[in-house]
Amino acid sequence: MPGPTLHLFSFGYKHGGPPRDESGHGGGFVFDCRALPNPFWDPALRPFAGTDATVVRFFEAQPEVAEFLAHARQLVLYTARTYARLERERLHVAFGCTGGRHRSVYLADRLTRDLEREGFPVVLTHRDLERAATDGAQDDAPDGSADGGTGGGPAPATQP
Image (cartoon, rainbow, N blue to C red; front, side, top):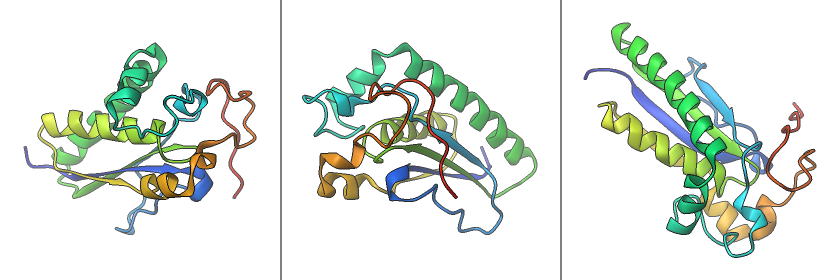
């Protein structure tokens, strides 16, 4: 299927805002994953990344994660198919969580596989994964959100 190249990113809000669309066209999607369950709060999962099997199993057992991914997939696929018809060249999609190690990484990775199965070329960048791994566990620690550390509840507004 000819169509746009989909540029997917995971990132941590603690390391800055969403990645900039270097094409200069702007647009696309930013999905805030901070309302989802956070493996950081399980000491056995904390050292692993969103691509590791133990964390993947954790997310696959959470119905709200599957629901979130389904909604994101539906929006992105609709837009990618429309962009293909309009002969647009790229679409920018970013998933953000606190530290850029667990939730955003898992979701960007899963959506990448789904989009590739649909025939779209995808460039995946985990912007803060290495930083989160080398900075230590505090990178995914509480960020003042109202969720009491559970990973649920409303995500805080980000400061400009």
